[in-house]
Image (spheres, rainbow, N blue to C red):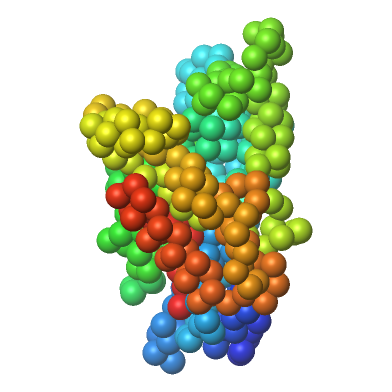
Length: 344
C-alpha cells in the first residue's frame, strides 16, 4: 500500500473541485484499511473516506489522511439448501466495485432486483450510507448485511439491515456512525425470478403499451438508463454530483395546504400521513433552474443538479446551495437538505 503526500483530489470527485489531501492512500483489502488507520493513528491524523467521488463536496484542502476504498469482488452465493426455482440468493460485493457495473453484472447472472437502480454513479460502499434509491426502489429493500471496520479500534464488525437504521436517503452512517466506520463489503438478497417494479410514474409511462412478455428486467434497466440520461448530465461532460437536494417529506396536511396555495405542486406518497415533495419542482418554481453564478450554477434541464462549469470552489457550490435553500424556505416554508457529503 502506497501513501502519498499532498495528493491532488480534483480527478477523484465528480464535481471537479480543486482540493489537495495532506496524505492519501487507496485500500484494496480490509487489511489495507487497518494499516491505513494505524498509520493515521501513529501520526495523529484525522481520517476522511472517499470512494467514487460522485456524492461528495470537497470544501477546501483536506488535512490528515484521505482513504479511497477500492475493495473489489462480486460473488453470487447459491440459494439456501432446498430452495426452489425463483428463490432468493445473496450477492456479496466489495465496497470498491462500481455500482452500475454491479447492476449490469447481476442482470447477466440472472440476479434480479437492482434494475431500477441502474446508472446511479459511485461505488458500492457508499450505497448503504445514502440508502440509494431511484424509480420506486430503495437499497434497503434488497439489503441483507454489510461488513465494516471500526475506525477507532480497527476491529471488524458485521451489521444487519436493522443495525443500519435505513430511511429515505438516510442511514446510521450519516448519523451516529458518521466518520466512525469504513464499509468494506455488502451483501444483497436478490431474486432468481424476474419481477419488474413499474410503480414509478415516469417508468410506468415510458413502458406503457409493452406486452407483459416484453417487460424484462433488462428492458427496465435500459429504460431507467434512458430516462436518467435524458435528465441528468454526465459528469464526464459537465462536473456535478447528481441530485443535490433530497425531496423533503412533510405531513399530508402540510402538503395539502401548499397545494391549495401552489396548485402545480408535485408530490408523491411517503407513507401514512406523509408526502414527499419534489425538490426539483420547488427549486425550479423558485426561479433557480438554469441560473449561473460565475463558474457554478443550476443545470438548465434538471433543477436538482448543481454544476461546476470550470474553476468553482467548494465554497462557491455551498454558497449557491445555501441561497437556494433559503429561497425555497422563504417561498414555501420547506427546508431543503443537501444529499452530498461535505468533506473538509
